[in-house]
Image (tube, rainbow, N blue to C red; front, side, top):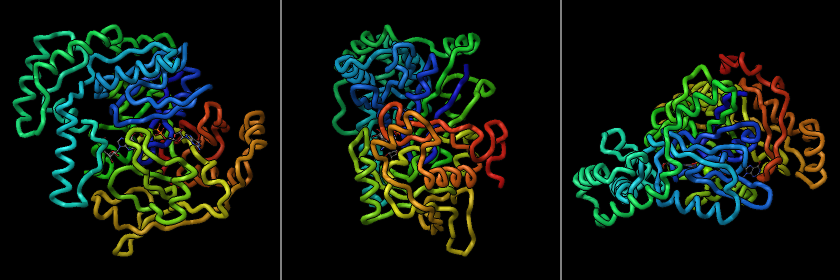
Length: 447
Ligand code: GDP
Ligand code: IMO
Ligand code: MG
């Protein structure tokens, strides 16, 4: 059994939840490795739709264990609501563990998140990040500053009181902070509720590897939102890369068998920041409408645009993708031509092929150069039936051309193609189809 890492290759919402759910069918553990309630991972198991925020896809299958890992920041009250809602819907079928090392997001962090983003926007209207206002950045900042409270510490009233005391001292400038005493009481109570699930998870994963049990590391956010390698400062405050998945799970690098980059056949972004292939007008609205491109967490409309191979090549190098999952190809169906960005042209006439400029301002002003590929027909019921029975060979010819193009241009073979939100609406390609084989993908950017 293998250890497979699922990483967002664009700006988030690539359908990492759906792909992790498919992989979960042959795994024992599914581990969320970073972020917190800023994530919204939509999964359509038979009989319904689930949006997971702080639990991993492993909780949906009776044979799997969902783990919320050490690299996460967890808002315990929202987590309780998520658990209760899943139970009510009858979808909480696997068991779940919560890492005792994960940090706690407090109401103070949410207030700070909103206050800080408003401050940025007041100083410069274009500079607000458009965060999810879930307290992610401030909670990670307190973790780094060593003021943070960890999930495992909720069982110790003395420690909770001490940390809260410190945190309130550092946040006196914030408006409308809740009463510290009341918050302490609520934290101890929710800590008791979560206690049966809180434990050291990394020894469980190490043992699983020794036993040969399958593990999926379910990344949240995406490579382009990485704190260091994303479009800083328009990023999240964690490391949603394959390197971050190791830190966020406690697994060492040599146990990783596959790193699967998830990319839509087009691109979306929520919040502000560079997005060279964004398209306005009818074409953008069409993607938004057909793709249902509204945030799974905040409900905000997602900005839409075309697939960007420069960023895909960059994400491939950064994460060491061994294969790609290309999702939502049904949304592009019916177009006569499908544009793909193949390189950037800069103001001085130079070109960039496999990485964006480091500075967000420069990134914002590149000119994308497009090639267009022939479009493919709509996904009729008959085509869906054929795909379910015959698999990849039933994919329309033009779509196979698109897949081959993406594989060759990125140097990464396409392993999965998703053509609908439902579980099962995914075909698996021969791993050697397109690009290089999994392990020889060591230099995916050379061509
Ligand atoms: P994640 O954050 O990466 O897990 O992705 P989200 O759940 O935020 O967004 C993906 C959206 O696309 C969800 O509404 C999914 O149900 C939907 N979806 C996933 N795969 C497909 C697909 O292949 N086709 C279509 N049409 N929708 C999909
Ligand atoms: P999933 O896992 C899309 C974006 C926010 C904002 C920036 C910083 O569902 O793909 P934060 O609240 O993290 O400080 O916000 O990052 N963002 C996401 N965009 N999908 C996500 O998660 C995101 N998580 C954060 O919109 O621009
Ligand atoms: Mg999402």
